[in-house]
Picture 1 (cartoon, rainbow, N blue to C red):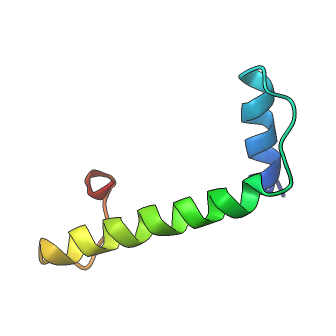
Picture 2 (picture 1 turned 90 degrees about the vertical axis):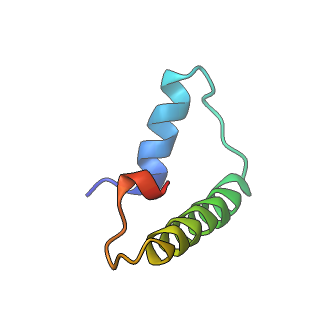
Length: 56
């Protein structure tokens, strides 16, 4: 099983940034949660119970 952390490290390496600080994942988790909650709000405002790519 490939974890999100592993995938992120691979993306960083491909981008030429091989190192990640200890707090990066915590901040990324916060950002992802905020983004998901905003997308949920948008879906609800549009009367849907399904979140879609366009909600991002």
